[in-house]
Image (tube, rainbow, N blue to C red; front, top):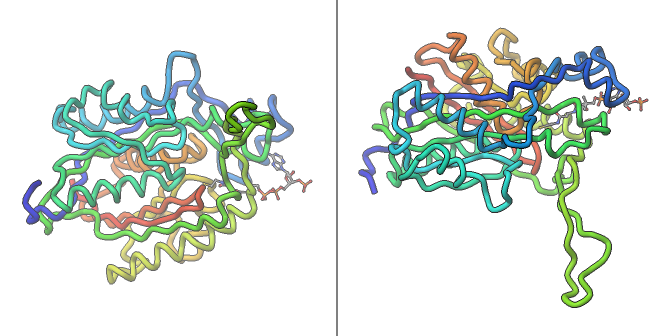
Length: 335
Ligand code: COA
């Protein structure tokens, strides 16, 4: 247990990884009845990356994103105390974080998965900050990684146009309170509406005659697009405003709005409701689609590498999606 004087969280580095294989809107027209024009205008997505090949998995993507973050600050993986892997598409239902720990050779890290779909990264980052601010751990690696391409019905045009595969990582460390970068957060869940966007387990029709139990498997993603759209556009601005209010900040203090990259129309509608200029919004979903838990750290890492983010910038991050879950974190950026 570290000293309780160390009550802040510093963000040391970010990293990201996407698969090499791309899938354009035009290529999707070979799978389902759709068009580049329909997908572009309704979602803003032009292409996405897919994890192909039988020998690569989410572990490779997550480990690569983490290695890139570690390399940026020349940190040894042995310095990591905790790894939180936010994913809803593990390669093992018992969890994938331990495989990332092994592949990364993060010999001193305890590791676990956190499942919260597209809100996963925000929830994992806030969870990490709690361990850091309580003094329990010194250095935490948070990874958001998803390979939803493996869970999509590629004959369902309602969903197959939206998603892509990626991983994004962030290294956080405890620090003195006056250097704290995670200023505040606001998190929400409404399980009553879980069925609007889900990837559910389903029993087979027949039961084991001796034991009386049913066994089954997971379905593909199913989504009520209109309801999910309405949920995001109504709830995300409220979460952002609540979080800002709790910190005595206002929309005009925001340097960058970094929303989960689900759909350009959702992002611009949220920006509209907040009356925030589109020039303050980070968007990269045109290239990657909705990469679920990876979308926020991927967009953040790209914005940093494009030198968009400056010292003392106020970043407002909001994740939203299946669960339903949604939440906001306000960050003060420091290099
Ligand atoms: N290509 C062409 N036409 C399509 C299509 C596709 N990929 N998908 C649906 N359509 C058709 C529908 O069949 C419907 O046709 P109809 O009018 O003849 O019945 C028409 O387009 C309109 O469908 P609708 O579902 O009303 O479209 P929409 O305007 O709601 O847009 C989404 C669909 C999915 C783009 C939109 O609802 C959305 O962005 N929702 C949020 C999804 C999301 O971000 N989920 C993840 C959150 S983490």
